[in-house]
Image (cartoon, rainbow, N blue to C red; front, side, top):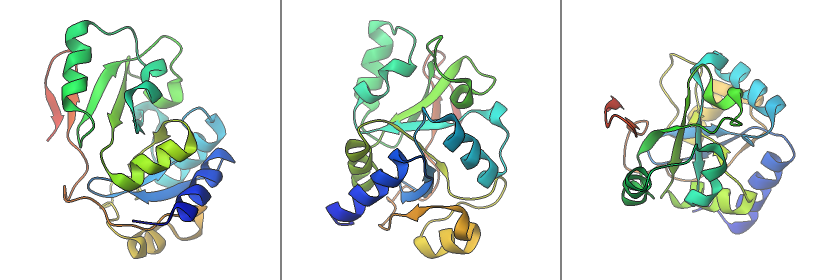
Length: 185
């Protein structure tokens, strides 16, 4: 686990509009402030990813995500409360005001309350959710350690927060909250 100082440093980079790489449940993630359109545009450029695809946002607690969600039924909220925190990403109906740079062409937003200690501490220190997309160029294998991040992305990332990835060994599964379908196993 990185020191509190390093987590604070990474959070400061995020809150100043920067792009960071950090460990998550299965791979290193690239992150930024999800409400900063310039930072998100830069992150998408680094990933060579279309903005139409949308992005995942992670948080330490569900209240850091609720502003992005449309009103949820009790059953849907219960399903999320049972799954989180944990390594499961859910497509949740997006609020009308959810930024299109996060939802892409979709009416839902991909979200996760992370149980990974570094990612969770980072969200707490930032004081808000983070974009969390795998640290790689689109179509390439995701980085699972700092060395791979440096090799693949070099100077394009403003800060790399070191630490071990979780045991998942791959990107998190994605579930559709309304249909229950598993979209990425």
